[in-house]
Length: 151
Image (tube, one colour):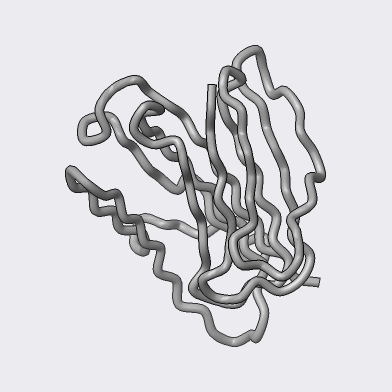
């Protein structure tokens, strides 16, 4: 069975978005093989948007297992809602959120037929928590999830 995994580490600063927003992809694996993202990752940051793109050419197989770790630092006061949607079909998806304990996370499916199940929620250290969700089944393009952060 093929599973895609997305790890989201959301860190919040109290500063303005144009100066202190940061995004990176510290790890990508395809079929458990590490991928060097230096040549396939692009990032565009303006005063109003942050757009990241990861382009990988895959051939030789019909199915691949993906692991993508993303980290983003954004100002809490300006950016409390995150949405993630796909442009491809995804079969089985794990999502791991890492966030500060002072925040509460509400999670909502967006357009999916089924529901994401919580498979874990625990403290990582004195300041951080982790929430792990899993979707069993097929996610269609433009479907995904939204999460809301509150203090």
